[in-house]
Image (tube, rainbow, N blue to C red; front, side, top):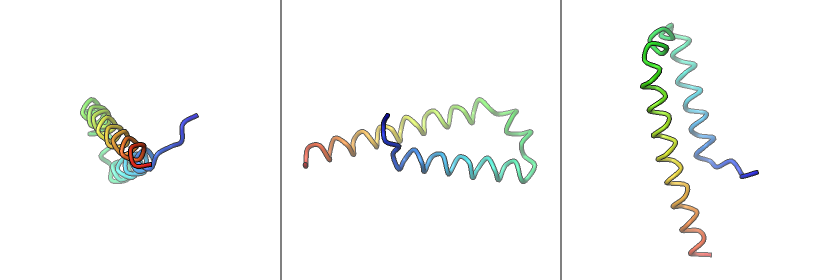
Length: 64
């Protein structure tokens, strides 16, 4: 199994925090209405963070 990266943990923590605030403030109805936007943001954020992680690993491999 792959080791969980810092970016994965950060993404999960930030997403959980945002969703908790949205639910706590009563905007859950808006979230369900615009769920496609939320999923799209999560998808592209994950792709971006994955690219950053891959670049970091390549730099580590070259240096060491």
